[in-house]
Length: 327
Image 1 (cartoon, one colour):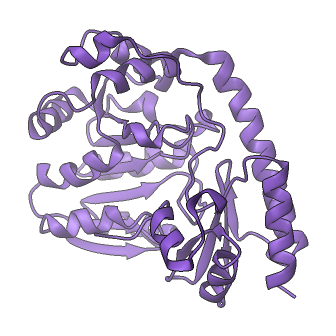
Image 2 (cartoon, one colour; image 1 turned 180 degrees about the horizontal axis):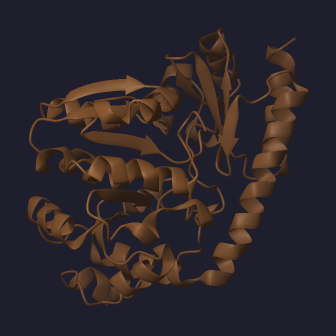
């Protein structure tokens, strides 16, 4: 099992700080989550049904011709490699490590390389895996550039797989509207932007033929009834979504400014996190953890990812801690 952000209970035990005293900045999940309403008893008492309106709400929100709900994009990350024969797979690095692990586990030949190298060597790959915007590296790609790459891959039966878990803040950058094209697969997560990580919900946007194969592999009832109920309403709440985008961009910019003032200018970031490469990342991570502030540590390259502080008090706490540890 790979390491991920959000292991706050383990950190609480390791550093001897009670759970309620932590400021958790270790994930890219929005701290301004969609306000979940009361869930009707029927959502708990009945098996989930595909014709409950969730698919229509998701297709409208993502502007996708067709899609499949899945138990978080992680479910698709693990299942998609099982739908191809042995392939040469290029995966963006640094990036979400589960992609490379899933393709290797399924017996494919995997190379983890920087985005510019991957895109310069498209002819090497049967499958190209990108994250847009990248987590944690922040790389972004133009829609037209990605469509050109997809066309080159698809012409010889290849796939372009794009993980858009962090694109909701800038939906104009999404490829979802083009996913009727064979070999173009886009993963979307409801956990980050909507602040619903615990729901374990996501969507795969792709051609119908591939979605049929994926659904057969995953089986029925990939999402629970309560999750489907919440998602259907969250995806339809356009006023909340518009306000959230403005808030997240502003808070992320404030976080970047705070880090820069303390000599920790971000290397990259997006509307949901800021990423800082530093040779002393491990010691800085520990020093902040000793003060009850949990960040996401990466070993390769040495770096820290900071999620968004939820309020002014959290900003002030982070500022004080950084002033102490970066003297």
